[in-house]
Length: 636
Image 1: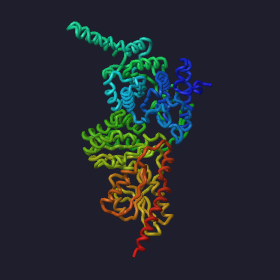
Image 2: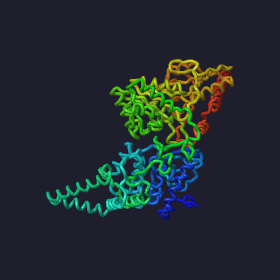
Image 3: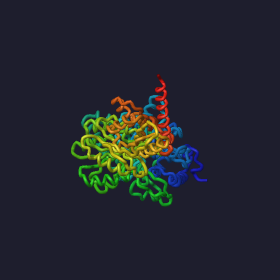
Image 4: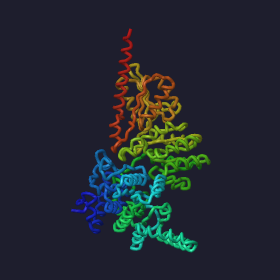
């Protein structure tokens, strides 16, 4: 029986010898490779934090001590150590979430897959422990160096620095900085000394005594203080954190269990805020991940565990179409630049970055800065294209509204993974963007339905110089072309069906739901209900042609991949009401609630967004309308 099979919970770690701990670390890595290769998921980040997570659980007592992971995709090892070893359904309905989940375990604190939040969470927990008198509890934030580029992390550190008795430990999982860790006995001795309260008392005594001893005393203190600070800067890169007034331990070899445990015990014993800086290697211990120059297997689909190669060949997807088109636009227009928030390759900017490195700006995990910086670039004569996952636009709504929108900045925002993304769960479904964008004055939003309209929308968007534009598109493979039979202004007419009655339905399919709308029209035609199927292409603001067409129909049915309350369908209903057009509108979209992890197709079925569901609802509405008219005809 291996060490992993004997493990029932994190408390079992404390009885293991160093040899058994190393054996367990090796078993966990093998487990991760075997399991994640079958399901897909975040592999590289978890391979890099095996020893770090083990050391955290060995020193701290979860769940009494709260451990917050930022971002949560590095929590797989934490799940294993807390008794969750069935990874067969990882990121699938009924299986483990890809992020921490309170529904799964008391050891999970927050589903924080939006980065840079962990220190704020931990600070809040530590403050509550302080107020409630829980002096035996710690809050531990595990945050990557990438997440430290987010402004919220530094707001939190500024707050943490305001107290010297809050039991808070921030573990920086650094797999990107260039300097080497300081290791060995001297480093540990200095860490232990600097996190000793007696050491602090001696320093304070020396400071007060020497500085009150006249000019000689002050000169002695200044000289000794400068010598201390100079030695610290030579020995370790701690000045940034200690300049904030937070104790710093490190850098530590993040794969050395003994060094990690020693550093964490020193930090725990200090009794106040401490930064523990660990140097780790993303993908550590798995050769294909270590040799992957792109992102060390940050996230993988199903792969062959021996080679790391994908099991299925990747088809043409929305991101690759964007990637190709943005390079073509950049070649044609020297004023077009791109901005990304720490994700150049995932959002499709790898090609542009390679060809036009000086025109691609990675601002780190700082969406707020990305939007406001884009507004500045637009003012100065450029046309920036801000490339984000749709879910992360939420973080920069104020900047979208007040910096970009208010100033009518010519900024294009390309939103990848818009709508239902499924497996990554509630925080990653890009379902809020259209409802948010709708309330930004002057903003125009396009939702392409296929490759041709994707390329067209992007070129139309960057041609707008006096207002923000958004182009949003889903995750995954791009569908078959859906040709239009007619274009009316910006609106494409996709299909018409003749019915055998007088009911006429206008079916509006937004973005990828244009294909669904066409099938709805076909199904209605089979039931003798006439219809016109349209794709607005530019869904916001509502095109005048949509309103004109609605006035010629008896019922409007909308289908969209966003929250239905305040979405495109609601905008059409409101615009028709303003025109006093008396036509019913039935909206189909995502309800305003958080959706658990499941496949996109499962969520679409759950939400009644399949063509057969929408057609059934529409036919029932038409029948009810017919019955009402018949009843009215009977009234003398």
